Amino acid sequence: MGNCCSDVGGGMMAIGGTAPSTSAANQNDAADWYFKSRGIQGLFSQIELSFSATNLRDRDVFSKSDPMVVVYIQERDGAFTEVFRTEVVLNSLNPKWITKYTVTYQFEIVQTLLFRVFDVDTQFHNVAVKMLKLEEQQYLGEASCALSEIVSKANRSLTLDLVQREESVPSTYSQHRGKLTVHAEECFSSKTTTEMTLKCLNLESKDLFSKSDPFLVISKVVESGISIPVCKTEVLKNDLNPIWKPVFLNIEQIGSKDSPLVIECFDFNSNGKHELIGKVQKSLADLEKLHSAREGENLFLPTLVGHNQNKVLKSKFFVENYSETVQYTFLDYLAGGFELNFMVAVDFTASNGNPRLPDSLHYIDPSGRLNAYQKAIHEVGEVLQFYDADKRFPAWGFGARPIDGPVSHCFNLNGSSNFCEVEGIRGIMMAYTSALFNVSLAGPTLFGHVINRAAMIASQSLANDAKKYFVLLIITDGVITDLQETKDALVKASDLPLSILIVGVGGADFKEMEILDADKGERLESSTGRVASRDIVQFVPFRDIQNEGTSVQSLLAELPTQFLTYMRSRDIKPNS
Image 1 (cartoon, rainbow, N blue to C red):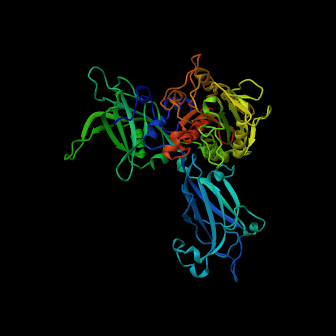
Image 2: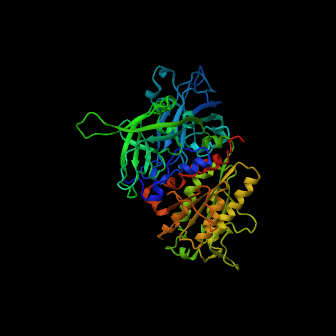
Image 3: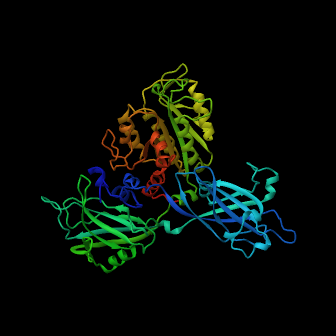
């Protein structure tokens, strides 16, 4: 197994699939740090896009156009790559194409799609669409959007004006080129979740002075034969007949019910060198049969190279309970009208340096190059803005002294004494720049005030039964000085529809900040001993984001899971 668990506390936590309730979520916390170390992170859903158009231009003399849609996706370098073509619909200015494009939706990145419509010349009607040379077809128009713009619509449909290549924005003339409607459907398999209670009998004791401390790791086997871990139970101490708490497996996560799974039983060791007790290889369908027959399967140990047979053990593996449920997904809630509302809080403490000097973290470069604060706002906001209908974002500053006033640890970035909202990401950027010339940087670095302010907005929204979930981005250059007050605020906020993203900018040592991010399984505790009901914080040093070249993916990856944990723990349905 190797060093899959870096410490006793984190290592003994369970890694489960998608839990349907609060209790299950607590028992099977997704220790994402374990997955991330193996490159497994983020929300991935398979989406089918279907296409229809109205009022296309008629480019044929004796008949109507024969249209085809070509789909392109924007790469990291900004270039567009062709990924899909529909079939050709004959003689139609209002076509509905049958062929669908399947794309993997990733919440944490902006996936820009380009759709071009062509009229296929009659002489090419017997040629396979993949073989058609586009330069030989008549161009009818194009449209572009982000995939998140489609899936965030209540009906998952987005109608776009077709424009010419040269037209960056639709004009009056371009409206005569017709409209393209793109509809998204989530593949159903991604909603089917299996819940299992697993147990073993007569395990071999691997410890000298005590019984084994067993836990299970469930891995899927990919085509190359490599095993990729997808789920892990908790550790049960000194137990040779363990019955673990339920684990949850998303069927799409493993491929299908017939996909091979390796279930390994290890003896936990705090140094991370866990010893294999035994294993079985079964598919979900096999596990379901084991449960139905009330039969056990003998564990085995691989033998040395050159021996054909594995060593079969007396220890047995059982499936105590097995059930399948269809769970609501993140996209179901978006289709049900739920929104993610973006909020931002910016650190204006003096440790950032004089904003008028180039070495300041707040320096506004005349060339237009963004500073770290601007980059964080832009990159996070660029992803989240599509999930906020009115795009009016609360924006605050903290740790500064407004003109002729005392130090404030939560002031409106736009300078208003009454309203904290600004229009769009551009509005946040303008308010931020303006604030730099209207406040004096001070200190200390306190988070409690802005967290409580965000929590108040989330609480009011909850009281009004609004379909809203709030995301607060805090950008800071230093370690907080109100750590316990911040913990208290976070524990209280964990009961609200709120997640908090913290970005550390500059070269400070942010190790203490990682305490707020419960990725290693240790829930925050308030000064009164109350434990947070769920993990709502994700912390990332901005230099790590830059070095990894993954933009804001690592920061945003947990958001859908935090959203679903909140909704499921309160049994909130998408259409409730």
